[in-house]
Length: 258
Image 1: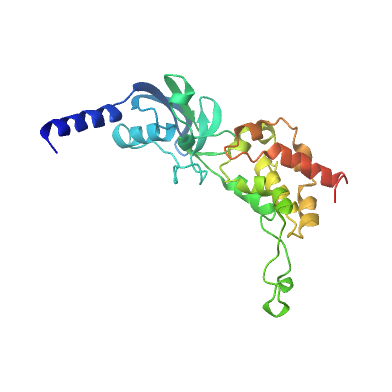
Image 2 (image 1 turned 180 degrees about the horizontal axis):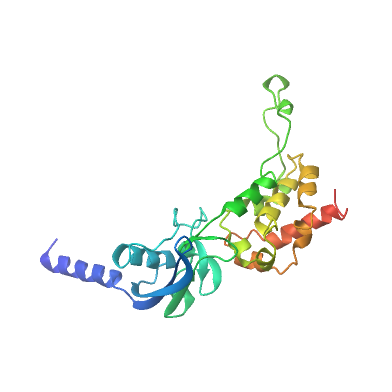
């Protein structure tokens, strides 16, 4: 390659990689083990058109303040680790582009309705315990599937799968529980995440645990505690629609469907 072509190539590369603008990133800082006070640290971060909020936070962590606590993993909206409040709304940091926020100031805070571990990281113990409570697996006798009977799998029609497939997309990010006003008022409420997953398995034609699950959620801190605000469905990054799942669950309990 000639020197001229090399220079042109380098200029193009620099043009593509140069930051389009800078934004102010306000990060909530707190450590309950030390004190209960919350403060906001501000940083000016260069961003590209493809920079996500998580990228901006990791820029701070790598170059400006190594002590920032944030949970993340896959960076492609699959693991659900980087849930937080971004400008007041629960969202995945890796799935939120800075330019799409249309503001020069971005405020990130830990999700509501979860105990804070430190800074942006929260404790998921309550959500995971409630998730386990509703038996998030297909309940079926092992004796029904045996090699000697010739039954190796339980087939479903496309119509059978359509009944629950939307709800199987849950990545347990906790955004729905963070947005739920009932979660803030009732610390024993099972939460929209667990209720939506209860419907996912009840609607599965392979499952035989419906009666037991309905008994678990038919409680004053269960499905009847939901006020149907619908905020859980508005923030779900996977389109699970917990609010609809809760309404469909109620139809079972009210005898409107078998």
